[in-house]
Image 1 (cartoon, one colour):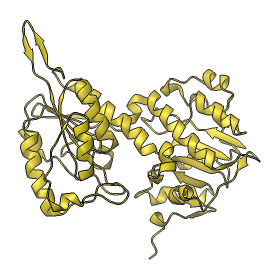
Image 2 (cartoon, helix red, strand yellow):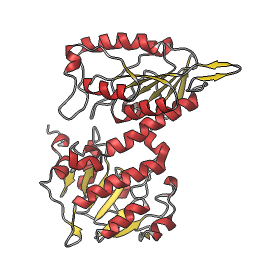
Image 3 (cartoon, rainbow, N blue to C red):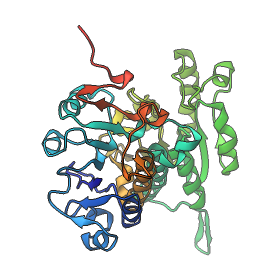
Length: 376
C-alpha cells in the first residue's frame, strides 16, 4: 500500500496534508509513504524531517499511489498523474463545482471530501471543519488586533487610562467561540450573537454577553445536525435592527456565519459599516462564500471612511504550521478506517456511514446523492 502526500499547487495554500508525526503513524499502518519535494516547506516542515520520519521524497510520489492525501481538491493537471481506482482525500469544496467533480470521476479516482464528515462522536477526531475553523477564529482576532490602531486591554497608566476594546462576534460556531476566547484573553470587552439559542450558554461561559432577538422563532433556529437554519425575513429584519444599533458602539466586529452549500448570509450592511467610528475594524471570515460584510474584498483590507474591512482568504493557512498539524491528524484518523489492519491494504467499507457521507466519486461516476449531475 502506497500513500502519497501531494504538494499543494493552489495559489496562497501553504498547508500540507501530513506532518512527520502522522507519517510515522501511516508507516505503522503498513504503508509506504512518498512525499512530493517541498510539500511541507511553507508549514515549516523541510523534506529532511519527513525522511527522518520514514518517508521517501519523490517528484513521482503520486504515481501508482493507492491513497493521495491533499489539502485542496486536485486540479485536472494533477489528476492526470493519479492511479485509476486510487483514493484521493482532501477538502473538496464540492458545492457548485460540478465540473471539478466530473473531472475526478472521469479520472477514475474515488474522491472523499473531508468537510462532509458527519458530526457524530466517532468522527470528532476527523472533523476538519472544526479543526480549521478553530484556528481561523483565533487568527481573525490577531488580524483584527494588527489592523486596529489601539490596544485591546484596559491599561491604567500615569499618563492616563487606555479603554478596553469592544469586540462583537457574529456567528458562534467553532470559529466564533475561539474568537470570543482569544479576544477575552487579550482583554477586550466581548459580545456575541447567533441565531441558535443553544450557544447562549457557551458565550456566557467564556465571559462574553449574548445579543439576540430571543423570540419563538429564535428558540427553533437550529437543525438536527447542529447548524444554523435560515431565518425568516421578519426575524432577519428584527435581528438586523438590534445588530445595527449594537455595531455603532463597537471597535471590532468579527463575522463567521456560513450555511453549508449556500452563499454567506449578509449580516453587516454598508450603512452599518459607515455607522462605526473611524479606526474601527471588521474581519469577515466568510469572504470566500461572498462575505457577511457589504464592501468586503477577497484577499484585501478595504478601507471605507477610515474603517477597515479585513477580507483575508484561507485564514487557517495564515497559521499554516498549526493548521497542517491538526488537518494531518484529521486525515490520519480517517485513513485508519480505510485500511485493513491484518492485510495492511486499502479496504474501503462502502456501507460505513463515514464513507457514505464523504465519498463523492467511485468507478467513473459521481456517487454522492447531494451532487448528482442534473438531468435535462
